[in-house]
Length: 194
Image (cartoon, rainbow, N blue to C red):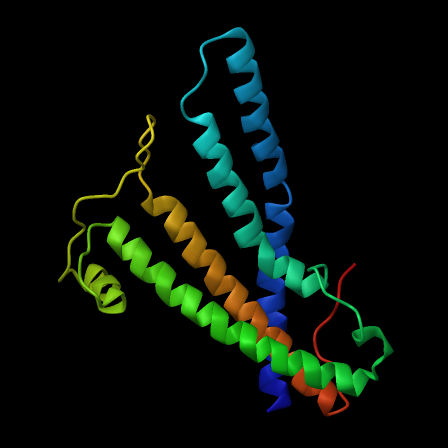
């Protein structure tokens, strides 16, 4: 069982590590958008797309980069009592809290799928069957949702990115749970990179 968990951790950590390293460069895309926004508002006519595109870039940056942050242990943690605990007690606590995170991410993923289906013109209450229907050809894309701003971009791409990020985060949370289970058994799986 530990071998299967170790293989899962290796694959998920490697994928999220690479995606996270790419997402680090997303900050420069966001800075470029905001720089252009400032320049266009100062010297030219203001661009309609910059504010919303900056929001989309920021959402992509932190949602898709989130699993990398969890993997590196750089997420924000309230460390009032935790630092004094033994490694075994930390592993028990981490295993319990990551189970809550997995539940939360599962709800977010399901809600994100429903919201993405809605943005693709699906009005029903079964988003999973809708996406399976899109793949099989029994469902069609309806009227696409657009933002209510002056630029009016389609909303489905950013919702799809959010679903992708939630999925990656769920996979990483399961990986962290497996690492905690291994620590409770006195083993260490996964490689922490610096």
